[in-house]
Image (cartoon, rainbow, N blue to C red; front, top):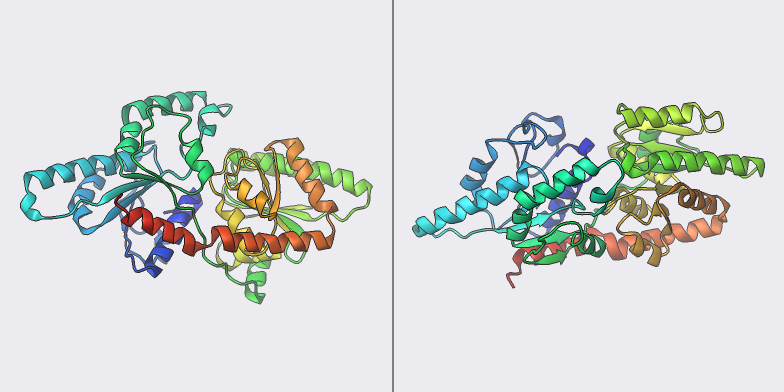
Length: 396
């Protein structure tokens, strides 16, 4: 449930908020330390069993906890695959069903098991350069373990139609009993106020300037290096034309990693953009919303993005999004004229930034209004929760 580990835990928290408003109670069991600071503000029960061991994140307490507690629930949702928790839930369910058949006098119903892979079945991970060994590992693991987990679950639930279709491609046998697209809606954003503006200003000197925002993990998959290269290119091109150039804010965890250090050095070594690119680190709370409300547009040149929570958060704030066509919700965004879409390469990202810079103020405002409309129609929380409730309660 650590926010620094990516968007899945944010999706869990958001969906729980919506489900609670619909009268559905939720509990989370996770492989976190019980005293982890990021659990303090959660208003739902979190059973943190301690960190898992090794790359598989094995935790010997998980299966016993599950078999002892399944009887209290109508449905169990596994968020994410490829680690011990999905295997453990599947095995615990088999144990629970066997115990029920041996002792039917308990008269306890068996909860449905749903798996939400959050893009982890995307073919990108099997074909990406530099992932040949990991791709082979995944193939073997799927044959031995994960395939049975997926095909044995009652339902697979997806954040968008593109994710559902892509999940069918990389592995065989892939025969889920049911596939349901529920979406992944978001709550209304915190409104932009003096407090959000001040909080962002305390974290980043770009506050008050015109800037384009990236917010997410500082990771190669996200195309951050390409975004910076493209920004340097268009800056050079438009400075010669004396065009106004917005700054670039790269916000998120991971600056201390090898890739994070690489992109900071990439900026530092370029006199052209050295003083125009800002790295405020991970932003949360008012500082995060201050960054969204203060930006001109949001940019994400990701090589693979299942949903893109930050993309939708930007649209909720009425900000156009400049994204690659590897963000799985790009069709909805393009159809809603809520942003611009290109290939996830240098030339495509240059095209995005260049088109944005030469847009008139009127065109930018129109696209910002469209972004907000697209959020309300397609990515608001209530419709997504309604679909998830249907997935949980429909037995057909």
